[in-house]
Length: 97
Image (cartoon, rainbow, N blue to C red; front, side, top):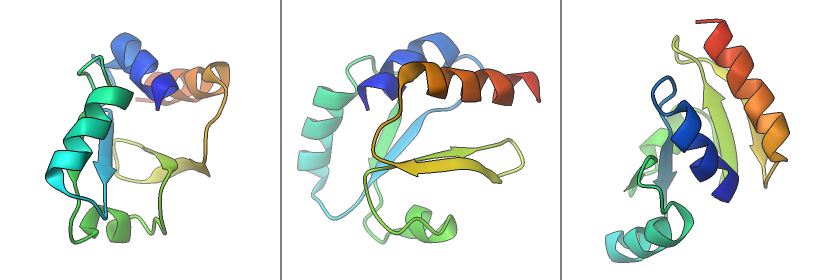
């Protein structure tokens, strides 16, 4: 999440960054969001009924999913990736819109 949060400060005017969480309380989710997403650029929320996860076929957390403007998954991975790899993917996504 630190990589995503850092990149959200650079790409936030062109890319929406969203971090849904599940299986927790709103209060705990808020605490974790404050810790992991300090920039305030990443929208977060608690997906209590796991609707977002189900809509995109995401089996669990932590996972990063990149969705294009047509609501198609263009990349997904569990765990973390190097910042340069994520940046290259975002550059490609932004260039294609």
